[in-house]
Length: 182
Image (cartoon, rainbow, N blue to C red; front, top):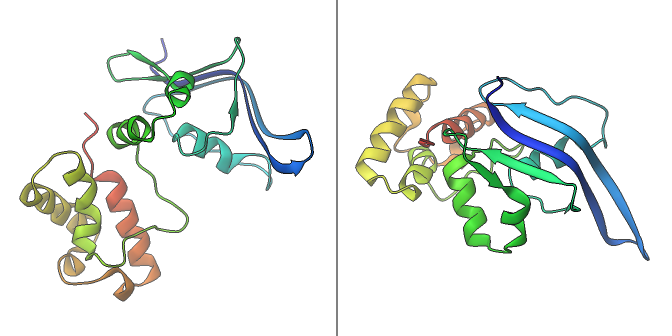
């Protein structure tokens, strides 16, 4: 039996604002998709087919979904309890969506989205502090993670704008793997 992470059936994503008068543009249509937990998944294809859209939808950052009574968009917790993501979106609560993302997902963006007024260490410890860990505990875990990625020498005193592009990418990766999702 497969250990599911996401299950999607009959879901469309559509941009209809300012497209054409009365016409929606469907940018992604998912008939049946089950994504397993703990497996590497690659999304490949031509430009414009919805690769970024599906990642944004899975990460609850893009609510362009069009659902009907036959639609299903579910997230399976570690204990196999199920969260109905269509219902979660329907609550129109940025607080609930933000809390859900904080506790279940992390992202590495094409643009690193690092906070320029924070040091490298502060940038990656920040999410752990949002999860309720102390600053001291968050900084210790962040230092260890930075050392593992060969960035220990920049941890405490380097601002983001002082880092090379490659260092910024590794810092963004460190920020994504540091939080505790248990």
